[in-house]
Image 1: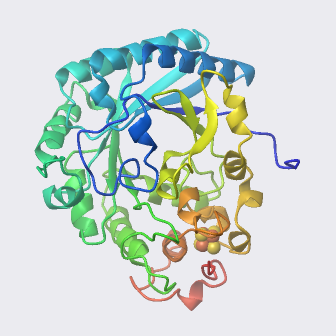
Image 2: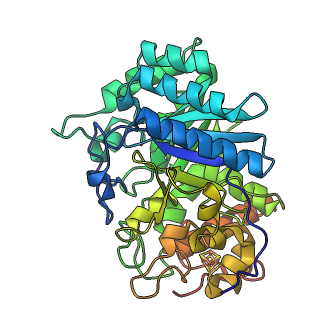
Length: 402
Ligand code: SF4
């Protein structure tokens, strides 16, 4: 069948799984705790050969499409398990293969427990920015982010953040990544993260689908617990006398409401332009698809034999690049779709119907967007719970039923 959509947008973000295991056992992790268990058959570490092949494929892809800037995310598992020297090799090898005319920026996404001065010196030398996962204060973090023996990971992450936010390494601090837990007080979580003076906080919704819904997300569209949680953060953040930090999801929605384009996959209709390479060189789709079903992120492609262009033709990549035309029918009929974008693609999954559904977070997204829209317009927000405010129906008439 011919894809009549727009021309593919070349990949500009490459997520490299440099290590496939983790030293923590976070209970919400989509790599180890969800449907897909492909990590178990992969090599622990990305070999020098896979690094070289990946670098050649990235260089080829960027050259073929005339792209001169791209970013590489060093990911895992826990990428720091690969060790400082190996990570240094990945960065220098990929930059060497990309050539002088191409700017590759690097960020490493870590749980922080292995982030020490030696590691940070390597990152400083090669300008590798560092994002750290932490869910709030110790109680919030201990609820999920424990070591395999049950011990807390919090003290080690805090030690790393004290180093990272200090004067020598501050410029490398990319931000904090926190997964929302409805049992955690939202303002308390936000203020606990603020203590590390992050440049940005990224609140992630826990992974889930219509078949396997996120905690506390019922089928009742009048129930919007995740919107209520994020609205509490928004009100604390928005009312601050000065901008204390960025909150990615809120800022992205505000940009979209004002007519701009999103830079994240969770909201908006900007074409998704990233791809994942596993430790064995397999090319995969967005990692969070692993929450849907086994093999959901697989493409059958590998850097050893395939160009990244082959992944651009994958139906899920095409759907993520087709804007409104790539949305489920129910979302296309929703006036919030330009801002919402149907939410994160994996959150649309329902067994037997695939991804042609609104997000399992539809009601929450609708309410959150409606609240921010009214606050930007200067009107007071709606009460923090309950069904959509009829007064908003002209702009955001309500979420679709899946
Ligand atoms: S129907 Fe729901 S998921 Fe789809 S665009 Fe509207 S609010 Fe978002």
